[in-house]
Amino acid sequence: MKIHDERYKKLKQIGPIPELRSGHSAISFAKNIFDKKNLIKFDLESQLEDVKQTRSDIFRFIEDKNNSTLSCVVLIFSWGGMRQGSLQKELFKSSNNWLPLIDELRKSKFSRYDAFREFQKLRNSSKLDGMGIAYFTKLIYFLGKSNNEQGFILDQWTGKSANFLRIDVEERSRIKFTGNWVNDYNTPEIYENFCLFIKFLSKKLSSDWKKNIHPDQAELCLFSLGRRHVFRREDPSIINKCRAWRSYLIEHY
View 1 (spheres, one colour):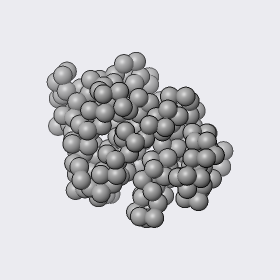
View 2 (tube, one colour; view 1 turned 90 degrees about the vertical axis):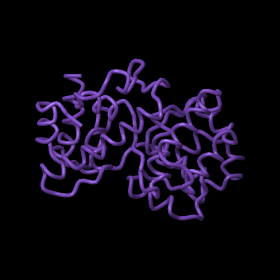
View 3 (cartoon, one colour; view 1 turned 180 degrees about the vertical axis):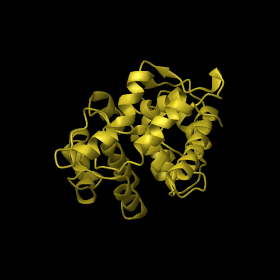
View 4 (cartoon, one colour; view 1 turned 120 degrees about the horizontal axis):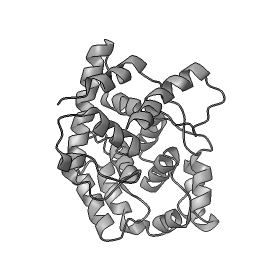
């Protein structure tokens, strides 16, 4: 794979960034999505906490088989900052359309390619309205991690970063957007190519930074932080470092 030297130089100069707690608290998200009856029915209040999470927190939660797959989905989407409007409420009301697929994903029954394809089938049959690529790839990332070929989160920031950095990809293989949204014209092949790029980038950063950079750390560097993320208790210099790549991307993309 080939990347743009000047743009990569900027990413390299920023250096590794730490992960900060983000999104909504899982229990507040659940209370906005589910009515009291279903909170009790699905036992969500006893499984979820009223705190923001890190990726490591979520992986530990998923590993505990006492936690339901539905509670894992709620935790992941709250961490990801999913909206809590009528479309998302309808999405969870029809969870019987998509929860079996996620159960299978959690049991490592799918490769990342196949998982993406199955989610797209649900999208194409109008059974996944309110959960686009930016969110179902979060499920692939977290719930499919036990597979040898881990998937990664493809959203507007990681997707635009991949398009921005790569210079060897054909137009048909570039990540497709409608405005700022990763759209449904993205195929399993495009997603697979994106995941391979994240692994390539992690190896290159590991070499240049003289330390082991796991692929999901490389993906985190591309995601970075936006101005709407507020962290009042963190060192401002750390926050500025975490925002640097996204600011550069917005200016030059």
